[in-house]
Amino acid sequence: MFGKKTLLTLVLLAALGLVAATWLDAIAAENPLFGKWQITDAAAAPWAGKQRGQSAETRKLLNLQISFAAKTMKSNYPTLNCTDAAFEISSDPPDVLFQGMLSEPNQESVAQSLGFPRGDVPSVEVNCSSGDIPFHFRDANTVLFALNDVIYTLTRR
Image (cartoon, rainbow, N blue to C red; front, side):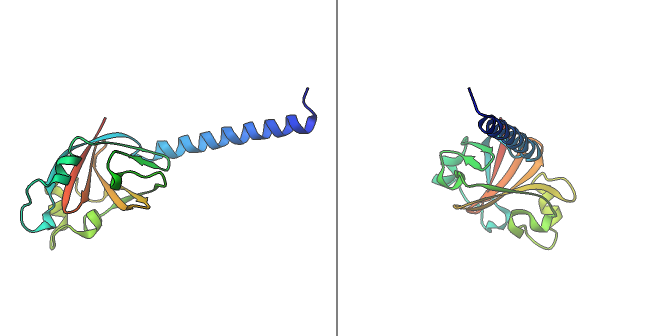
């Protein structure tokens, strides 16, 4: 039915598909951000100066669902939605959290007041055409990120 070349080509394509699927599974297992999350809280960022009331944007984002997978960040909010995502996993010291915006001189104390553990914080920066957003892990199921001087809390679903 199939010639030897065709059969060999099909076998090679199947093997490449299996390798690619295994590779993508390995990447997913390494990225702690992958999965479904919900924005459960919002608070004025410590660097915002004065306390802000809830804006229309903040009210729109509360309870928003966000899903992260290979090359995607999906939600109903344009800034938190892209199909060209690249993920950079790191462990950040307090002076790097929220793009270095925590108040000086004791950024570690400010980080702890936000619920982060002492020392370096596991983080994932999502790079999209809409911009770069760092997500910082308070624990395995709680992530904080900042947008327009508001710190949002994501909870794993």
